[in-house]
Structures are given as C-alpha cells and as structure tokens.
Figure 1 (cartoon, rainbow, N blue to C red):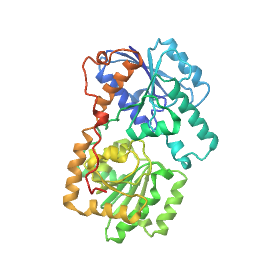
Figure 2: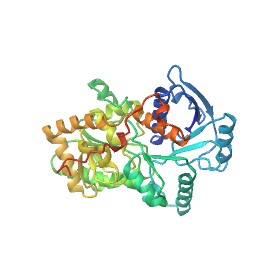
Figure 3: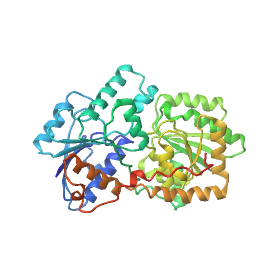
Length: 395
C-alpha cells in the first residue's frame, strides 16, 4: 500500500505535534508500506524516518484553505500513484481518485464562536468540514467527546472512529535539578510555580486562571503563576487583569517556549492547572502527568475523558473552587503523591504505537481489506474505550 500524509501544517504547535508523532509511529510500526510525506518548505528535517522505512518526502507550497490546493494535492497523489491519503486535519481534496481518511480533531470554531468571530470564516469552516465528512472513506477523531460534537454540529450519523493520540516519549520526569533551573532561568521563573501552557484564546480561560490564582495567594501561598504560550494581542488584556487583581508581580508570561524546554518546565512546576473550557482532547494534561506533575483540571468537555481518575477536577468558572483545588494539589503532600502515581498510570493508556496501529487498521478498512493484514498482527481495539471515570469525590 502507498500511503500519503498531508503534513503541510506540521509547524503548527498543536496539530503539528499530532502529525509528527503519528507519522513517525506509522513508519516504525509498519515500515513495509510506502509512504509519501507532503511537507511545507524547509520542514523535511522535522520527520525522522527509521532505517528501512520507505518514506519519500515532497514539498508543497499550496496554501491551506486555498483553491490551488484542491488542484495541486490531487495532482501529487495521481503522479505518485497513491492508494490512500490521510489528511490529519479536516481539510482534504474534495475530488480525488484514491481512498481518503480524515482526522477531525474537534469543532472548536463552531462550538466556540468567539475563537473565530468572522461569520464568513465560520461558514467556510463548516462547509469544508461537512464536505470532508461527506467525501472521506473513513473518519477519525481524538475523543468520544469530539465524536459527539462532530455529529451534533455537522449533523451526521456516519461512523466515526475514536483513536486517542499518544504522548511524545520526550515528556518524562526531568530529575536533573540543574537542567530545570536553567530552563526556568531562560523564562524568568523563580521559586515555586503553578504552570499553564496554551495559546491565548477565550476558551482557554486565562482570565479564570488568574482569578483562581488570586484565590491561591489569598490562602497564603508564595508562588508564581507561569503562563507559557505564544504572545498575541490578548496578552495586554490578561496583563491588565493581573494588575487589577494585584498579582501582576507574580505572573510570568514566557511567550513561545522551545519544545526542548517543556519537559523541564512541567517537571519543575508544583502544579499544572488546566482551566480550559473547551478541548477536543487536552494533550497538555497528559504531558504534565507524564512529567510527574499533579494536575488540576477543568471538569468539562473531553478533559475528564483524558485525565481519567488521575486529575483533581473543579469548576474553572468558579475562581474559589478552582483556586481551592490548586491549593490542595499544591500543599497536600499525600494528595500530591497520589496524583503523581495515578498520573503515570493514566498516561500508559496513551501510546503513539497503539495510535498508529489503530490508524493503520482504519486505512485498511478504507481500502476494503482485512484489518489483520496491515501490521501482521492483531492488536487490541480497546485503547479508545478505556475511559476511566474520575474517582468519586474528585470534583
């Protein structure tokens, strides 16, 4: 089988990690297939193919969400005699000779209109996503929550396969204190801190986190709040709120964080707080757990599905409740130890190799074949069903 993957958004900090990790896992799990990797300019080095993998890299300058891509991508697939295209995003060629698999991670711009205020933008988004659902041979999504959201907002009863993403092995506890201190120093972090990583969008609820952190300071905690993520125009608004709450001197905005520094920042944090109000999956929760950091989490959307029984849940729209939860995870030694142990156990549910194996089964189904022939062995189908509900009283 010759499989093409459209990786033109591999530089994106969110979906790009999914593209990179899934592609490298596919190459490792099933190197017998031929792979065509469609990459943006100057991104060939971002994919490491293992020895023996048959992976050809080709550059495409076609802009995402443009008319030219609807011509260029099918031409590439035709010229390279591709059997199947996997678009790890909802944007796929509408007219194509080969089989098509699409991953739809979420419907954020339909569910959270403030993230995309333009009515025209939302309509284009919905039309393209609806078209992908209609023309794709198979559809993958990241969580049961996202599956139901796609059905609700797109209005489809098509079968949608839930395949959980994995956790990059680079996310593991950093035990070298010097390495943690060096990473913290690069971003102006001193002393104990609560960490959150995420882009500035209304649904990420940075404002709610600041108010919860103010509650933490009222409880007498001496710590900083570190908000790691790219800078945009909303940072001015968040800084003003920090000043109003009289916590500006305790809030550190790191801006963009190098991927190599993230494990150190997670490992050095006293607590990882995720106040997000909408997540299709919530990968940062798993990254924090993989680094041994206690997690306090919003109790909505996909987050309990991902965090399972290993996070402390609270209403992120209630600053007192969320702040009190952070305080417990920050100060209670026994609770911290439990969250750390449970976090490691929870992360074991998520493996990129398992993600790749299940994805290959979907490829075979798209081509009308037996799932057993894809990787030469039958692999359990239960990874996406192993949702462990939070412990009673965790909320």
